[in-house]
Length: 377
Image 1 (tube, helix red, strand yellow):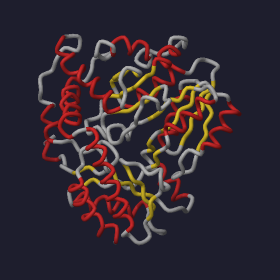
Image 2: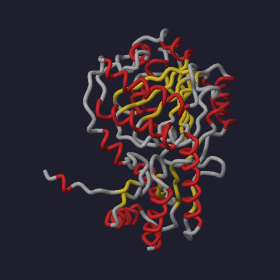
Image 3: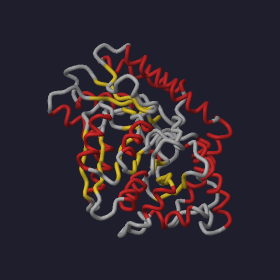
Image 4: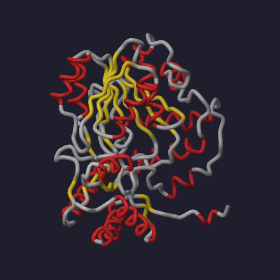
């Protein structure tokens, strides 16, 4: 196979995301032994920088999983929901549904509270479900990638804790793109990954686990091996991974996180994401018949979902995708399963615009200029 067959596209999907040339080049740095002192040169600063991005000091442990954010999420289900306990899975979209599926396939006593696409978590309905089901743990998505809805993490966690349950949060598509102020948020665990707002290749899941979660996990049986957060923690406290890491990705991660913290600056990075969100919202306002899906106040800083005009089909959006490919871009024609459900119900389907990671406002402006005439068709 010739590598010339591989298209060089600018990615405006919701992950994987655009990777800076310097991060690509970091993939050529030397391999290293993951139990050698060279490992510490990579993972010690990685751990420190992740804590700075999360807004935590010593009140959460950082664990890096081989795999993806899904691996970290599944570990919370395996490690924190004991046999006989109930877990309430709150969903505002496809990835909230995924957390529920993880609980079900792992044999947990799982119930789901599901909201329609575009809705955020309603605290009144959540409280009613907590009273009815009396769960030990509650999972929810901070930033729902399929709909562009960002939930109020602090408020949801407070409601969950009022009823004595542990909040387990999926933050995969927002971490690194917005302030999450994890300390004091009330979250027992917070899971994320490398390939979204951190602008790295996929390959690591990241879990922030409170002391409370670590202690609860000690009481739970049948946690698996890589999904046992206590076993993972032993290595994480030595700035290591439980199993052999992707050394290429570790090199890239060390370089990228140093850039985010010490060159771009954390606050500047978060401000850039808000600027790009505003650009996308302004763009949508110029398109007749298009409208933002998420409600005011709950719109994601990293991904925007947009309802297209009545009569536009999934097939039409696939044509837009190919037209944008010819212009050198990868366009996101909406989350596939959700759009299929919407189309079958006779409802308007969605497109998504990713504005996360290392995409710049100038890059986004060029993309939107290229996209506008295609959507006008």
